[in-house]
Image (cartoon, rainbow, N blue to C red; front, side, top):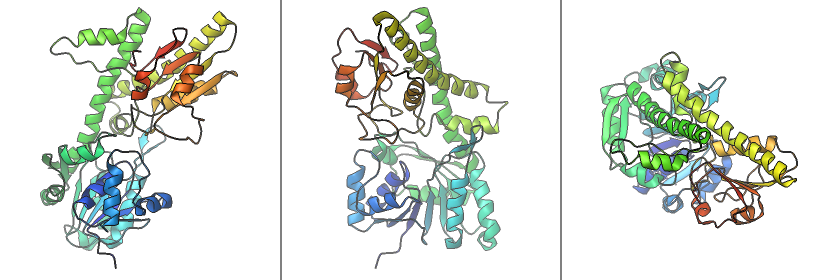
Length: 404
């Protein structure tokens, strides 16, 4: 007979599974929930369906010792954590239907004294809206359960370390809820736990990533200017950063991932008149991907004019950042799709060393691709690419600072 779970984790993706693994590693019984049966089956074998260093060992040990079990349905517990996607609908309007569905699935299970936490990135006011859903169906629970919002702050590729050591912002629907959630996270997190209210915690998550998006937009805009001015943007940024109070980020082929490329829209959608800089930064970073695709197309045309034949092209990287397998909102993936849509019988080699196969793209080994291709476009600065030795007759398009 399985022990009664103490925590139900709804959503076992890039954040939910590592969080469930961390909690269960501390001898807390966790019941994980995911709508994907394959994900559930994989976890119950002690394996993982994502690439994340150190995660599989933790999951394997937790499953083997009986502290972690997954299924497609929630069960009764004392703490419920919602870590499901919040995608978009329409014109970049946040869709909280997954949060709503996850919440409604546990409403019949809730009882006095339970703790309900949302970690999913959410528009301001979502926690309060879920409170209203719960109270509407279970009015007897009004002021009898604890509800809070606590966003994650982790970097893919270093999640297990950062879940433990990063500071967390925790905001409840009232002071008692905040303190209850702080006490819960205090069992597992070594970083400081900062108390606030739910609305501020929700906005804090959005602001953190919007700030980063704005800073990247400056670097990407600078790269566009430098290309027109015939200036090496990488050298320029290195020199400018010698100033003691200047820290310009590195440009790339756009911005991707489940946070920086997404969270600003949560603010822009709700506050369109006030979020001018945030909205413009999103436009710049989206345009950079289109610009990169156009540069590749122009390079192909120039090669054909010069050599009298169509070139072969290597598109290096599909992930949204270096050395991970995560393709969510990836600008590199968008560029590859755009280039292939405009293909005119050229040979294209698609490279992503961190995944074995892709449903859409036929993948090629990075060494083979760079040997065969006439044009090499670096979209993601994976470590493998930095050690390549390329022939001088190759056309190199470096959009991510490989600097070979």
